[in-house]
Image 1: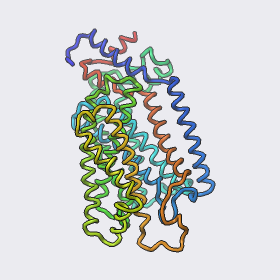
Image 2: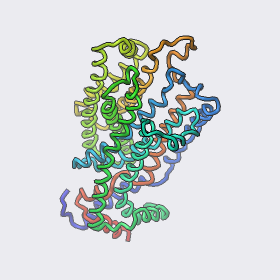
Image 3: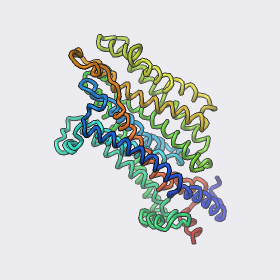
Image 4: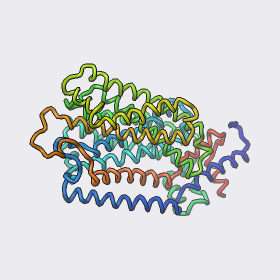
Length: 451
């Protein structure tokens, strides 16, 4: 849009942006119904966790041999999905990509939701969760588990800062909006920390955002690289790989981008944000998903081709279980419906429209979760020593209803966090959108409008 818009035109354009964003803030009947459903589901799942605490981990499918089941697969998936914040805000933002403006805040909210709950997923895998504090008191620097706890915590803190910093001008703009209740206006005024919208403040804000965007890149790469080292630092077949770090990171970009597309679709539809989350943005994210999926496909081929070519004795047992054995249906379904077919479909523009792209992304997300399951479980079913003189249910892992319910609880918590943040704060950045439309001082114009 023309950067020299008349003042009246600027006010009119700003009013539309503020009205479109502000009408989605706050609590309504749909919010009560949705949160009520999630709360009820959460209590059911928490009861399952109570049973696990009372009776022990034996109520889950994990046993002496497969000691990491759905819980750890879920943890890896959550850490992976949280990297979308870094990919959008830092990598694309620092590269000067402009189209990310309306999707950046959604990406950060998703990142915070998944990263914050990832730690709780680990707790669900502990038979004695009260001993978690020992990780901090007696943790050894040589332990990848301590590295994981450290980088996850750091990533959550930086993501919170990256969510808050660009919110400051928006909070000031909305602090005098009559559409919002008085208590929320006062809260926004307090959180805007005396923002005036001066050039000096904007320069300082841009500098702070850039610094945090630079800092989050190594932290985000570390969070999933360290997670991969929990596996790769062992000698077990299927995990003994030198490429697990980049393999996990590229897979994280696939899962995170797909989840962002799904979230965008529902925000666009339910919040009526068609003017901001346009077909253009879905097309761009579809192309991004194709790119990261192709890179991930390369690592998948490499991960299986090399051991298949050498075919050591233990590798042969593991690969046979994946390719033609017990896990073959899941393995080929993940590769076909979660990676190969989505890549082919998204090469065509008509499949990068909002609805078809959302459905494709749904398959990618489901495939990404089961991919983590295939990384975690099959390897443990093939130890170096023979499995003998043990009950039949020790030989093959089978998730239980209790275990599934506790896993569902983690997804419920993520949805609750995303829902609360999206109703408490504007999910479309007002000031950046305003600047792109040629509105120079949105803070002052919004104050004039309120007065």
